Image 1 (cartoon, rainbow, N blue to C red):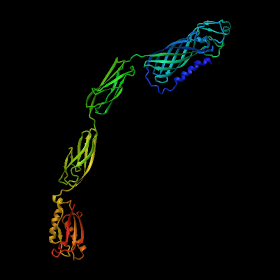
Image 2: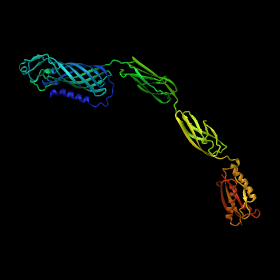
Image 3: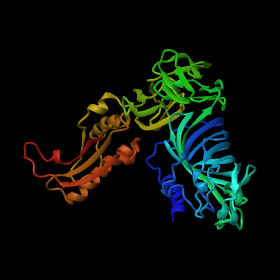
Image 4: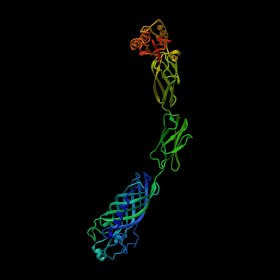
Length: 512
């Protein structure tokens, strides 16, 4: 059981090294460099003599079981390294035989050389690692046998070379990019069986077949990293002009083997500065700028500079036509119409198309339509962002004289008793109405026929009188669609003074 104590310690360090590191902040350890790892610790032995380094039998620390060593190696990445370790130690337990002997002052120092590969399991401030490799070692010892145990006739042998495999675990504590502190436990499994401890196969207490020499140690690792000057290799700037108020990205490239840390400072020709390999900047004013980036490393000893020109302009905003207006949505053929529009965005050119084949490039044009009708008016705006268009419909009426807008009543035509034939006086009255209707094509009319008291068939007679007036208008150029005729029947009783002639009539009522 006592000889398993180093194994328990080894397992404990294994558990610690493989513990989750979720709260362990990530750091940058040096890469691609030569390193040195001096260490000091306590040696222990497990082999045929069946003693552990912590048996506490009173003879454990008669001499200090020290272990000293140094490792020189090369770090290929921040995770992987390969080194050559040289170490020596006092393994005083190696002579703690259970078989009595009078032999004194057994040699207990051993040396070893190992080729070790190492892998860090994380890049945290506390990084566990494992290591494995090949070893060779030696040191003077006594070759023990049964006879040696019985009578002390032991022979010293100074040429006891052994070889085998090395494995171990450790914890690396980050100090800075080139320096760290470590704790580790390492075990060398060596053969032939008798060379490390003088107990060959078939000798006293031979029950292992392999001997183990180990050490619990602490040390410092230091990377010898020569400074490789930084050199900017490229600078990515915008080729085209950029807009004010819009973020612009700038990127620099440099030699990959430049020694870290590398500081990059961007300057924007009096418009601010920024740090980093890739930066974003927003220019506040238009103009020509000379943008520069300066890279430094080696504590400012090495510097590389690149510049590029940048043109800054006002941004191009797409045009938007929010509304279109006409000074008169129902003009006539003699009225000029003024057009306008609410337009936002960057400045552009106007192209008005009035729907009758006419066009204008003015911002607020004026146009007169020659013919009545319905027209599609189109406005196109072209600016730096492209072309947009909007449409509106306008209805043009024929021109009308002032009387067309002002007239409220027209002449009535009077008829003889029980007659629907127009008289000369009636035609003369209707002729004045006809001239107005022909001059005012937008003016319609309602014709109402009436009969007086005492006339036969008053409803039929009033219908005939209304149709007679309608026919007069149609025969003289007024379209029937502009006229509505209605027989109103008997109009009522009149006084003897006034007579009944005023009720034998047909009225023309203007309708707009």
